[in-house]
Length: 208
Image (cartoon, rainbow, N blue to C red):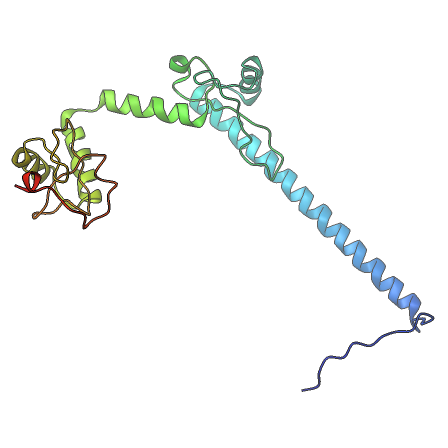
């Protein structure tokens, strides 16, 4: 294979087809400007489509238009009605301004709120409206995913340990199930001991 060579041109070098070279450069610049203009147009159309979709969603879900939402946000000075934090831009790439969110908890929160406050209100609503059977199923599903045990096995281990941590042996109001410690040969641990590495020394009185 022939090695790539670097050809050094003298200072007084002149291109034989200078006119063709300049025309080629102008064509490249023109195509580049067209591509940039096309990309900017696509971004503007995307922002406009997002705005239309958001306005339709606000009207159908909360009976509030995008204009009314913006006026309410301006009245709140761009801050969450619940925590008082300032709204952050959702997508800085397209130059979208910071917006607070409307939700079905506007009456409870006192106006537009941020995403975290809406999630907290939704979680509290689900917990308050949940039945004991639903809470039991959720707890059982969580224990299966975290430690691979059922809720009945957790209650049996808690009764066998008499509310004491398996590692430190202290009496705790709540014990955690961890995949590192929770198995038939070990037991439940407290929150302070769950951060320890497996294989550490365990008190004899707690293992009994």
